[in-house]
Length: 141
Image 1 (cartoon, rainbow, N blue to C red):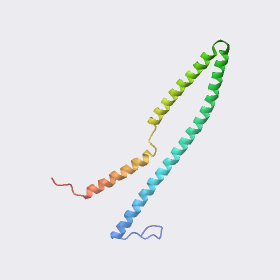
Image 2 (cartoon, helix red, strand yellow):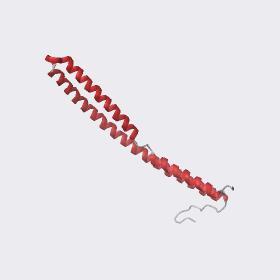
Image 3 (cartoon, helix red, strand yellow):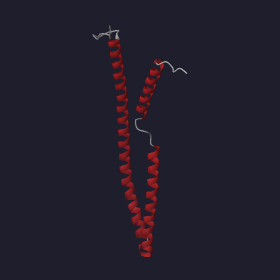
Image 4 (cartoon, rainbow, N blue to C red):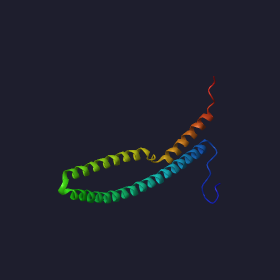
């Protein structure tokens, strides 16, 4: 009998063993789903924070770049306006290329989402395969 409750213990026959196995499997699946949901929430929060910081940074940098470019063009307006405009455009193109390369590198280096959940499922699979191999006699040579 289970202490402090009205639950009946599982019978000690094949049906009881199947019930215990089912309950254990449900508990295992529940634990893995809880882990996945926690990782999903963490990933969502991390991405949301990064997106907000990225939007704010891009907005501020766009204003700074606009004012610097305007200042350069206005400064050289009387002497060599076309050279100033071309120079500003080339600097923007080079900066854009560098940022795209950095973004590509960051995407490749990003950690795999749900890595802990996948690792737990892999350990479960290996454990079940180990138990299955332990119950099976080794092949004869």
